[in-house]
Amino acid sequence: MMRSPDLLRLSTRMFKTRPMRTWLTILGVGVGIAATFFLVSFGYGLQALLFNHITTSESLLSLDVYPPDSNVVSLDGRAVATMENSQQVLEVSPVANVPSQVTLNGFTGDALAQVITPTFFKLDGLKTEQGSFFTDSSTDEVVVSSTVLKLLNATPESIIGKPMAISFFVPKPISTSEVSASIDKVNTTTDVVQHTLTVVGVISDDLVSQIYMPFGALPEFTPDTYTQAKVRVTSSDTLDSVRESIKQQGFTVVALSDTIAEATKIFSAMQIILALFGTVALVVAAIGMFNTVTIALLERTQEIGIMRSIGAGRGDMMIMFLTESALMGFLGGVTGLLMGYIGGEIFNWLVNLLATRLGSSPLTLFERPLWFILTILISSVIIGFCTGILPARRAAKLNTLAALRYK
Image 1 (cartoon, one colour):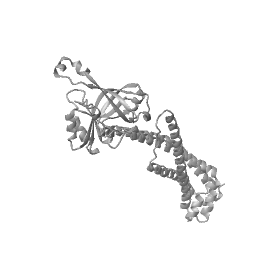
Image 2 (cartoon, one colour):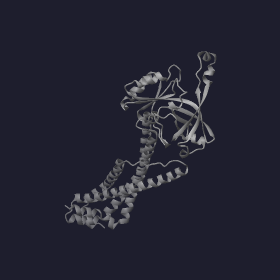
Image 3 (cartoon, rainbow, N blue to C red):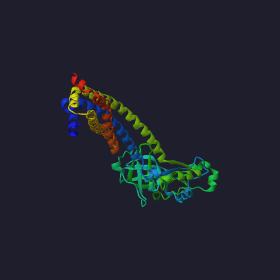
Image 4 (cartoon, rainbow, N blue to C red):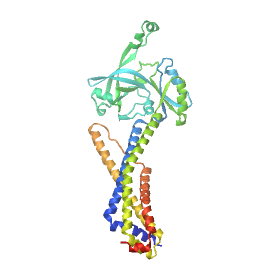
């Protein structure tokens, strides 16, 4: 029986006797590991990037409530109060829309004014690109989308803190006789109300030209109905029951958590596909490692015969070759992690360089969970170990006399 230090020293002899071949084999395994690590961490990065930009903890517990297409049920103050009275509901944030025109520095553009309570921002998962949101005590502040900046030829830095003139087209109350006289008049009669509000924040939105303002900023407007309401429930366990209860009242209900669940399934499938691409390179590298260990067995056949003749057992031969292959797998894993990390950082830097020149904010495209890194390392050792099983068994079964005569 050989001593453990002697077995370890013999297992690492390939670094001295065949350094080029050994390190090329390790590099081959590293390339396979790097491809897998790069692609899967890229998938995790895209998933984290999406979720961090569209969700908050409050938005995952929120329901979007909309009035139905028919006029049978209205999303009015009474309906909002009914939702608020539920023990499973923490808060309700109604939204009313008012057409408007915004003016700044001689530029004018159309925008949809969303009259909201400040809690709407966190329930909708919104985040500011520049500045901050208004608070409950605010009555003269407004938050704008980035599309509004394009209309006004402004930048987020130049517009924060600036007064903005806004013309609101508020529906004009009309009498019952006027309603019966002209149905069209109900839809077209408006009052133009002008206010000057201070811009305190900018939200990244390149699709819709809209502004957000508190109800107190437009005292002339008292909505009879709301276009939308955000309902925050007490916990994820009560989300489905509250949704069904609101649906039974005739409203349309949408949950962001459903969208997140579907997106998670898509990203999981994408990560599996990316991992399969990386696994192909890893399998090729494992075949190369098997070839290296097999050649090492043939080159050291006489050496094995000598060791067997002076007392080394079959188990010693197996341990020696298995240790050698597992060590190459471990080093290949470490090399692959370093290559994948460096490659990811270079790719991320190039993308951010391009994004900065195009006016976008920097992004982090790669996410590397610790458990995933440990899984890569353990898997590389297992792959190396499994690759060396067959050559190790052949080494253990070699006949001592035949091994001594081998040339």
